[in-house]
Image 1: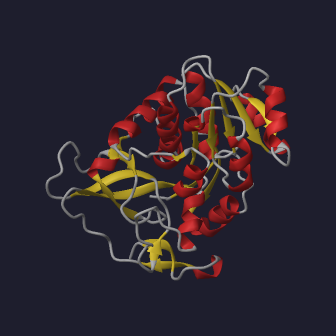
Image 2: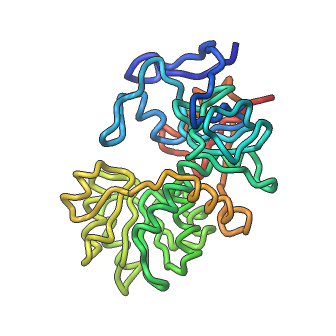
Length: 307
């Protein structure tokens, strides 16, 4: 039977386990994909603790980890057009992706370009697409200055690169250990920690036009003080009500195939590198998740599924 990595209850790593599962059957509008790679993101371990998107329900248990995959179409459900068995695709699974098979809604799946590896493609549907959606949402003019908190992770690295393609000057806030990485992506590095706003103002003496926050908490609150126009404050690191109290907003996700195709095109053109810095086989999925959960990952972590 196919293997999957699941959480059997809401809590800590002690709830995680490998289990045998039935091979899924695609429903109307769905694709069954033989998974080749699955991206690892902070939202994965947060869902294990009971986190759910605003308006959404917590995952039914046992729940398969994972929110982005790439692979090969194994079956096509009813009412699906534009996809066939054998197509290489990537996208957001219906209910988890740390597994040998996953179901994808056809509306949130896109063809994988031949020049894009399965590993890199699996790093795009959450991190790169979130970055793309947020930069679009801010709609800053060319030459504007954007501050990105949590700039050294997967989403942050994608924001830095996408913002540069829009002609923005980018200040990346990250730990000292990620200074070289942030600067390699064309951003001005500012160390994270107390008195963040003062260091940002020193790095951007002409002012800040937008803030894309990936951390939340006190970092978000302090970053908000950098702006005169709080409508240019967005976060993927805090709930919507917290952002709204500060005059900003939660990142509005498009969650469609058009965005997936757009970020894949950026990779093919050489404007965006997924920066997968470490991969793990499926049988070490727990180790991959710990690497992200501990908060020290640089770039993207991806689980590769042998075929």
